[in-house]
Length: 190
Image (cartoon, rainbow, N blue to C red; front, side, top):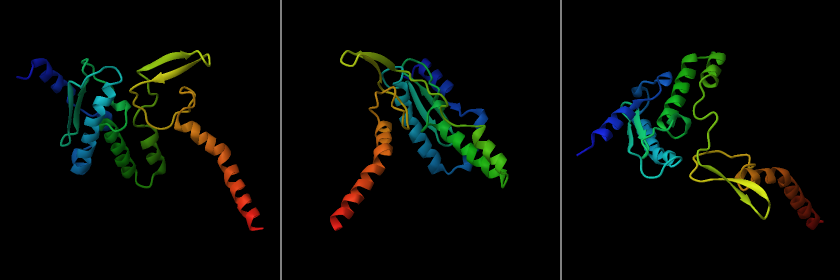
């Protein structure tokens, strides 16, 4: 038998996506809405790992009505709109697409659709950040576990151990390596 608390949580969490970004579900192909819901259901457990362990109490998404529910095992509802690959993010993005389309050839209007209504996190909070000190280098290194971030960080908080550091190295020395290789190749021809 389903508990009253779980039923109440499911009903409370099956919220429509933010009223600021309402779109008619029928304006998006069902296959796209189903993909959005698959991403939403996949994202909820990962997002919940930011603050708790265990599977979510509620993890639902209805592609027909564009409603979802995500309640973590500690009973809290994370702010899903702060993440990509979630239903609110997709609805916000589609709202922007429809807004731009409705603007026609008015570039100012189209620009305002995106700039005045950004989607996803503007200033993401690192929920599980811990600081440890390393005695060999006598510096504090920030480490995090189970983070949900995308894109490249600047590397300063992770001791330049991420892809951004490699890209900066490539920017700095890539041209010199290519030029040196070309010079060596032409030198062998002579």
